[in-house]
Image 1: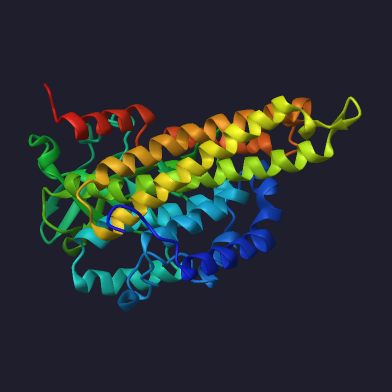
Image 2: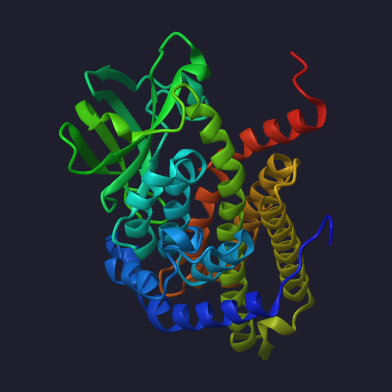
Length: 384
């Protein structure tokens, strides 16, 4: 299918295996993970033990070499029961992308086996206090110091920061060159001058630690530069093409989890002598919820197929997938709360958690406004 995708028997079998793992090991922990806000090391180990943290890494470097569609199925199924836990594989891929695109064969041999096995969790450091959507406006610098690099600055909103031992970091090597002055580096948690700040107190995905990270004359070896100096921003934008669609998969999973909860509830809850689900208005709400979620899933899967084929319209489809799925997740989870009535507003049922978790899919990896800007420019080019 030149402009489509196909779910193979392998994809369907993989989904069933992951769904079983999620039901057995992750779903029972979801409410507790959210309530405590603690990183679920047991879930990370479960994912690692089942070879699910190295899906995106080639077999020669210790991974599975799975396609992007397989990876999306993984994130979707985990998010269906626990959005916090789905951030673990999502960020593992995001942090790996600069290495996948720019690292040398020797660097990949050194770093990827530990990432693929889950021995190293890896975070991605691009956003800063004054450079979020405007990533090219970052102020973190990297300067040569003999045979090493010295990094100085602060990164913000770093997912998994306090759990990760490895970091892909974007920094200015030529502060006067704008986006062309950004380079990419591999940093370790125990490098001198590196530290993690306090965790943010968040609305959702509370079990995924989001922190600032600080570089205070952080000294790293000279061979930690990824790819060419000055090409870091290009690597970053290309990485987003491959990971925004995975956020779309996360959003689809959250929406599906909310639909599952809502349909179960309206079957059992009785009002006026019959199940709530017997009322046409409720059925219409569910019809819209599931239709929009299925549509979003198709767009995510299509974007995943385009990523694997290397289609030249990947940027467009990845942004559309993230945009559509994020907006659908928000609408669906709000409706799921509504269908639960007053109970939906309590922690007794999971839909309020799904609603809180859904919001982040409209914000990180580029806000919905940025996605619309990307889509518009893909269609029209830059007009100013």
